[in-house]
Amino acid sequence: MTIEKKPSAQNQDQESVERISVKERTTATGMEALQSILMPGEKVLRVAQISPGIYWKGVVVFVLSLIIMTTIAFNLGLFLMFVSVLMLAVSYLTRYFLLLAATDKRVIIRHGIINLDTIQFRYTKLESVELSRTIIGQILGYASVVITGTGSRITVVPFIGNASKFREELNKILFDQDDKANS
Image (tube, rainbow, N blue to C red; front, side, top):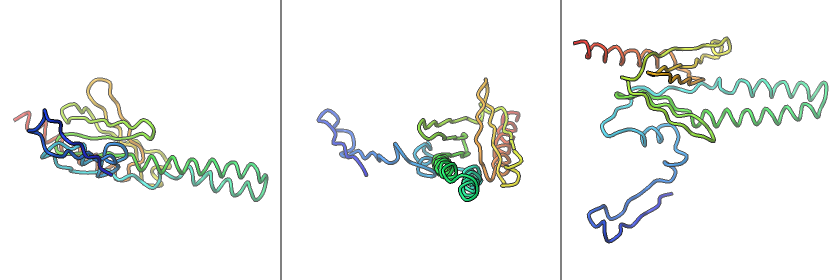
């Protein structure tokens, strides 16, 4: 869906039609959102993959609800099934809106469902990139990427499937910038 806006008589030097993509402004996800954020000439080096392990809690509650529904208490099992469906829906939306990307100029993080935040770190403002793995994360193959910026800004991006490769890419960029600054 696009909105077309005709220029006023005062702005005859502007384009005849300006197109604004409503989807891009409000609900763009993944590469669409990334393309709308990029500056001209900026290249994407790596986009983090969100692990399907994001659904594990909802699946566990769903299986538990089936066991309780068939053995102990039907109503309690039904309630837990409803809760598991809500958990799976929140997990799906989180995966849908979560974005972690490294470009040749900065790191872009987008997260949230109701309050959608976009955080951008220039490489000159990054202090460290760390990985945090839980036991479940190790089993399911995901980690949280912890990005520390200058000052007191710490951002944790959970459920990253290719976290080690992403950290290697960021470290490579940071070391290259240090080498350029020192030479």
